[in-house]
Image 1 (cartoon, rainbow, N blue to C red):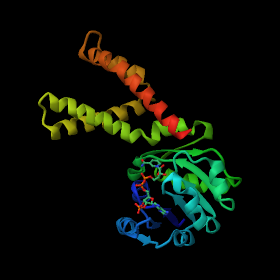
Image 2: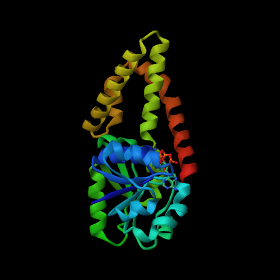
Image 3: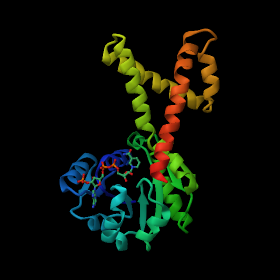
Length: 250
Ligand SMILES: NC(=O)c1ccc[n+]([C@@H]2O[C@H](COP(=O)([O-])OP(=O)(O)OC[C@H]3O[C@@H](n4cnc5c(N)ncnc54)[C@H](OP(=O)(O)O)[C@@H]3O)[C@@H](O)[C@H]2O)c1
């Protein structure tokens, strides 16, 4: 399947690296597309229409506000369109691409290492075989969850933004360690290793977060004290963050 990317920014680069195959790509500034094409192989196209003409599936990796502008250029040249545009609904995609099979997905930056969490709206666009092909293509990049579009904003608030939240948690913990005199490089290694092992443990334990908390927090021990200090602010913070995302995405 020949992949075309409209846009060559952060997510386009991560997707292309994850797929590890040549792509045809475009950008507002041709040099950006050239940089991506030289990174993963493939061709930097001078126009979006050239991308569509050279591709079996076109992935929209530009900004959401550019939906109509880009569709005007390529809509009559795409049979299959995958959109990663945050907040852009299937109905809006269908209006912009009336003659294409359109699929709305929400990946995250971990596509780059094949460990992404990817949501796809559970709408096969009237073609089960194409839908299966799209899901197979996405499964090269990580775990794929087909869900109702009414839950897409919440999914965005968990997995789409998740790598940034975890990076912020890491940064905050490093800062706290450095404030206590630890060398920054060692603190980063400790925090990264802890997040890696703790994530793997959570998955191995069937996501039973409560049991893990119980096992680490010996009664009267240091974890209990740390959790008591952290739980309230963390819950408030993540609730506020979800509300902020929903406010923008809905
Ligand atoms: N970042 C994430 O983690 C993430 C996660 C899920 C979904 N998304 C979605 O992914 C999309 C891209 O986000 P991003 O973070 O990758 O943004 P980005 O780094 O700013 O990339 C946007 C790309 O679109 C290009 N572009 C602008 N106008 C264009 C046009 N008319 N035709 C073709 N390309 C054009 C830009 O080119 P120039 O740089 O040359 O202007 C740039 O390469 C957004 O819709 C966002 O909602 C992002």
